[in-house]
Length: 229
Image (cartoon, helix red, strand yellow):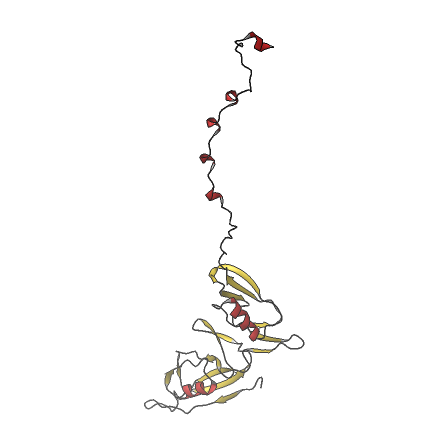
């Protein structure tokens, strides 16, 4: 129930002759644990625990530098943080994921939202099928080719992986550019099989017009005068 709040308290622990429940401990990391496991881990150290179901956790947290989904009923925040020294008289406050982190209603007629699946490293056809299986079926996914990843492999998506997005917004995959197809051969010899101009005889090897018979009249008089008529 939204806004519900309750607290649980673990049993105290004594240290030397001190007051019961008054000892110093190092707070363990209980992020992403189920509520039961987190309470048990803190209780073993004598720490008091205050638990709040929370619908503002969001779907993911940054855990060890990686975006990680907080499942329903699991810890999304803790205070004091892991590694801090504290007295067992101090409560550890936990917020527990109180909604489905993978999808939900947007309200009214806006439809539903889902988490964008992580399709990085997938062949483009498999990535398309994965996105359809998650409910994104209303629009064709756009493709942008890039030289930054392997051929026909998705290396990035918009929206980014594990982001909340509706089914009607545009989706874009950045995909490695496919290899160029081999050139087609027509069966005709290409220019590389033809002799170049340097292989052809030039005009200097051809007889000129002066060497052709009948093209010019002789300038020598005929030996027989009758040949002139």
